[in-house]
Length: 330
Image (cartoon, rainbow, N blue to C red):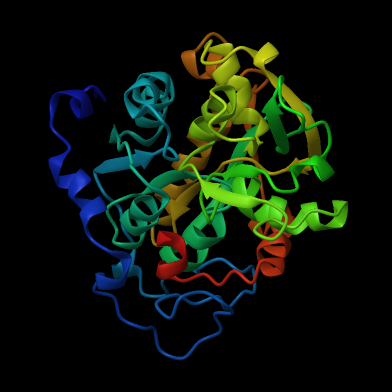
C-alpha cells in the first residue's frame, strides 16, 4: 500500500468543498435526544459534550480512503510534505490509503468534516468547539512532550522600535487580531486584556490580518502597532527564518492554552477509530520533518475535550460566542 497517490491525483473534488457554504449542507435533525449545544443532527446521550456515534450501525462510516487535514496555514504545500511521515504511518496502521487535504479556511475544514468528506483533522484551538458542535468532530489527541506537557501561550508583540512597552501603551494604537474565531489571535485578548486595563475595539483599533503569520509579519513591517499571536506559530516562523526575533518586543504573555486538537469524525466505525488512535499514539516524531517542525514535541497525547477545552469555552463564553456557521465564517 502507498500513500503517494494523493500527490499524483488532483484534489479538485476535495477543494470544491471550500466552495460550499456551511449553511447549504443537506442535513437532517436527529429525533429528540440529549445534545446540549451540539447541532440538531447530533446527539450527546452520555454527556461528554461531543457527538455520539450513531446508534444505527448502518450509519457507521468505514471508508477505504481516509482524508486528513491540518489546520489552515500560510503555505499548505510545505505542510503536506512535513506531514508525509505521519501520513505514511497512519496508512500502514489503518491499512488504508490516506490523503492530505490542504484546507484554505477554518470554515472549509469544519464544513468538510460535517459533510462526511473529511475523516481526520487537526483543528486550531479556537475553531475546535465549532468543529465539535457543527461537524461532529471528536477531539482525542494533541501534540505534547514525553512528560505529558502540552499547550501554547498568547503572546503580544510590538516592533522593537515602537513606543509600546506594556499593555497600557496600546491605547490609541492599531492592533492586528487574526480572525474572529481564533483563540489567541482574538478571543483570548478580548477576554484577558480588559483585566489589564485595555479593551479591544474601545481602547485600540482592531484590524483582522487573516492569520498569525500575517499578524507577525505586519508587526515586523510596521503595518500594525502590535499583534496578539500564538506562541507556537511565531516560534516556528522564527525557526524557519521568516522574521528576525530581534525586530520585535514581547510585552505580554498569557498562561498556557491547549494547542491544535486532533479529531476523528463521530460516525467512523469503532474498529477504524481504534486503528486511528493507535496510529497517533504510536507515531515517533524523532528524526522526522514533523518532529523538526514542531520543536519540543515528542508524541501525541490523549485528551478529553470536556476537560482540556474548558478554558477555551470559558473564553468564548466571555465573548458571547455561539457555535453557528455564520459565526465561524465571519
